[in-house]
Length: 234
Image 1 (cartoon, rainbow, N blue to C red):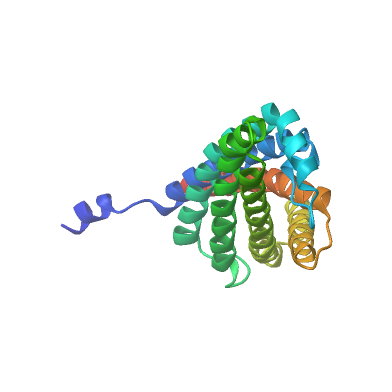
Image 2: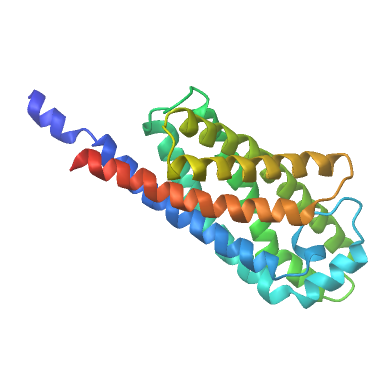
């Protein structure tokens, strides 16, 4: 009886392996979406404190192709990333510190915010910017877009710091540790630029670049998680 029950139990390393692959894929998609946002005029695609909403309206209309593409890709891969983070939160034992699970939870909340703003970028804002007499409605949704971007960046920064610092504390010197320090720097950039937005200091390119760079590092980190889990099951 014990043996048959044991067969029904999930294999934790295999679960973590698949979560690592999903994290890598989701983060890579987020990186691609971030590149497309970078190709969109910043007045449309990035949060700017005290924005010129007329300029944002015009920029969204002119950059609607890349903005819509970024939003569509972002929504799809946000969901993949979020699912992977949830599985790692539940099944992966903290490596360096006990704050790592909190980091995964904060990163999940960050991606939830980005799901909403990507949906706004994919459909709502480009349509409002090209429709007749919709300036007031566009203004409301653009401000909502900015708020979710800032909230997502702050959560990403806090969560990323917790995850990467935990990994740093658990490892000797080596290439992965250098990569994790890069993750900390991008996370801090996202956190600080998000907090500065609240006091009307705009660093939109820093904020957007932090999400792009952080997404790339999470993609590599996901592959490392999958590789480590695969070695455990081998």
